[in-house]
Picture 1: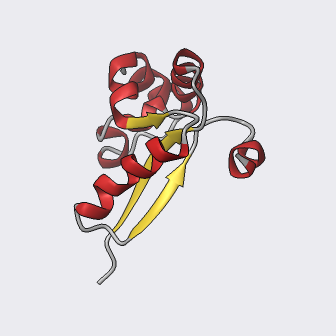
Picture 2: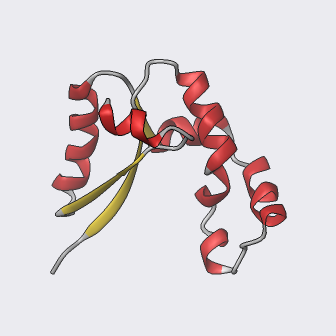
Length: 100
């Protein structure tokens, strides 16, 4: 049976910029209540986003421009038994991320 997980990454060394972008686009989804309590309006997601600290974002995603750091981050999930990883990067330029 497949075990899947989405991992969050930023392919950059600018930690502050990566955190800012993640907060702008996806921080509201960091709180489990978003998914469990049908919080779907932009206002509700913005309220959730406001309580997510920078340290939470830094600890839950891999921010680096070094492929070896990303491989090590992904390996944790493989070691935990996941056999399908979906790599997600917040931000408006998904093409740039894929190319990187």
